[in-house]
Length: 298
Image 1 (cartoon, rainbow, N blue to C red):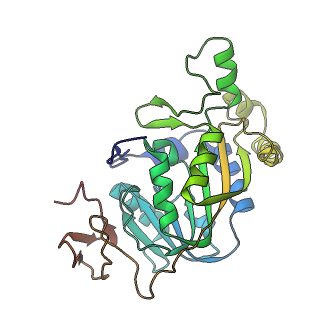
Image 2 (cartoon, rainbow, N blue to C red):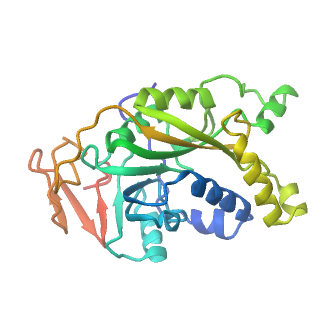
Image 3 (spheres, rainbow, N blue to C red):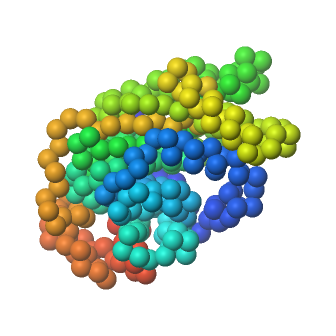
């Protein structure tokens, strides 16, 4: 689908959490995503990988897990997450490229990708990386931006939009911002080693007029009911999928955690710098943030 090195969407220096969530009218979107997560996520677990964690908006919702690894390409986003969550041993902050994850295989018993896949120029490759670091039968919750939503369909039918919401190829509506077709996403998940267990359609009423006219609590309740149609059809702008990692996976060797994203050798956890015994690549740990971004390390 793409070349070996897909481009990365980098939120370095961005005030995304403040400008998009805290200072904008996004209480509805945040609340309905919380409903979906509560429905899909197991109540407890050991080690969860949050890919595209950003400033940690969703991280407190993983309270049932013993430990959470927050991964993002942007160091400044992870610094904002630290300011929100603290630096306890329960949280591990990792700056890394989703296409070259710095973890040994079969390490995590759960993972989430929420409001992140739409930045993936090569979504199948990203999903394959996620599967590799998950244990057999692990839980994977994926959210994606749905090109086959009612608004897009209506605009296409009245010829206000050129791209076809029914075609299976992704549409890049802005630089490194993609909408995906439900059947394409299901196909990618299956080929990556996942079994789709449940789907929820989310943010059905993501329009200014609804948010102005309908009280937030009622609007969230309406969306909560509409989410239950997700297994039957996917016509909302956002879709959450509960997946199970299938196939045989050899459990990660005891005491291993990180691997070199350059050569794949297991790394010893030796802050303030991790040195790969296979290729001598060095990875710094600064302010409790592990940095595995090969394109950024000097």
